[in-house]
Length: 127
Image (cartoon, rainbow, N blue to C red; front, side, top):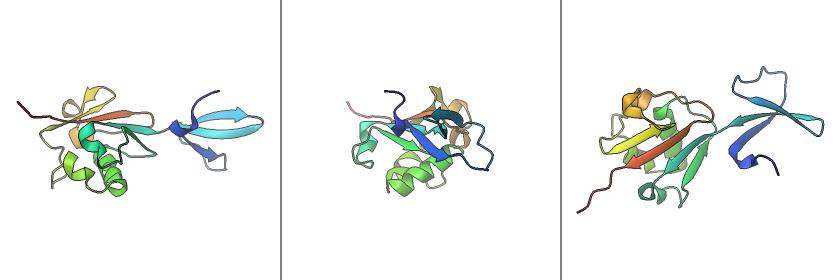
């Protein structure tokens, strides 16, 4: 049946120059600009904030700090579980961008682009 539309943001072609990451598709003589969304995958500890959603899609975020801000606007309380009062990723939270640990990249300043997959993994304690 084709690509699932829920994974993409659709826009009508206009006189505006297309974003460099957008792909042009022609379907039934209609030209669409399609771009992949940033996917944020969440563990069970954070799903209480997202009404049970395992994955959240964002249409834009320049870096991890902006991503957390967007998540906080949509799901109040989740930001405080990911970052501290200074906006730094909490010590017990691991954030991976396309399988790379953000601590080995630029931490909360790690840039994001369309199609990226972000995993947020808070540590689990127990004994």
